[in-house]
Image (cartoon, rainbow, N blue to C red; front, side):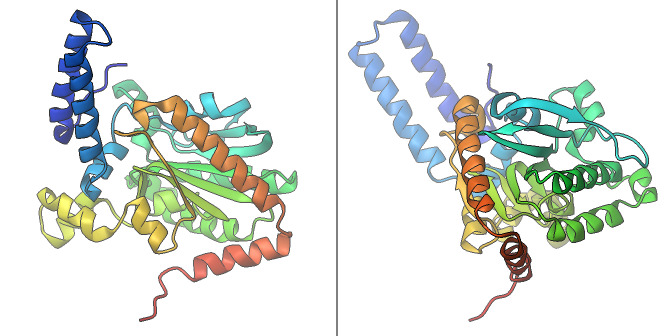
Amino acid sequence: MNIQPLDFELPIADLERRVAELAEKRPSEDTLLLAARADLEKERIALYGNLSPWQRVQIARHPNRPYFLDYVSTCVTDFVELHGDRFFGDDKAMPAGIGRIGGHRCVIIGQQKGRNVKENVLRNFGSPHPEGYRKALRLMRMAEKFSLPIVCFIDTPGAYPGVGAEERHIAEAIAVNLREMMLLKTPIVAVVIGEGGSGGALGIGVADRVLMLENAYYSVISPEGCAAILWKHRKHAPEAAAALRLTADDLQEFGLIDGIIPEPLGGAHRDALAVSASLTESIASALSTLHEIPMKKLLDERYAKFRGMGIFSE
């Protein structure tokens, strides 16, 4: 796969190109080639070991980054997609179905972006409509009925803010999901795999365990939106990203997420299969732990978890 480097990755891309050129001309044990590879690894560690919040946002949006259905193909077996909210239609930005993750049979819900114009039109750039959230809730209630755990993959810049979505009550659909997910009598795991934008992400994010990939972000507003409000220009998005404290490390420090899933240097797109394996293991481990908790205690802990967010003492 040809990986398009981000702006801040261009020096690394130049080094990678030089190493590739040397590898074509010299034997694998050549001293010059080994030294070039060592320099490249040193530069990678220096760059990716000290990423700014804005650089992590850029990696979370990388066009080669694995999306929900990519993980379905590698992490989920026996997947059967289910369609429709039984009110209006089927939202292609919120595919969902049943399958197995690490031996656990579960209902799986995710947010899906596209890689080209045609796919993005189909998937609405990963921004779900109200029917997406209503479909998700329909399947969550089915999961509760048949005692199946729920796994949600979050990757959206936000719920769709268009006229049609407002006419079909997008805010109400998200609000109902927040209320009902708090009461569902079945274990819920949510994983932020890319962008976690505002209520669009939270609409499938009320869970007993919330996990994040290392270079994902989860925020009440996008850095560009925050910059437009506070600085009146989106060029201040890097400062906004730092102020929002939207990285996995920040969110774990605040107790807003329960675990971080590591990525290879450079992001999940550098080794999607390795990330898929880690993702499967983390989800399966969380589900195994949650299955051991009595249901009343599980619901009480879920409620306390979210009621405690935003409360600080000094």
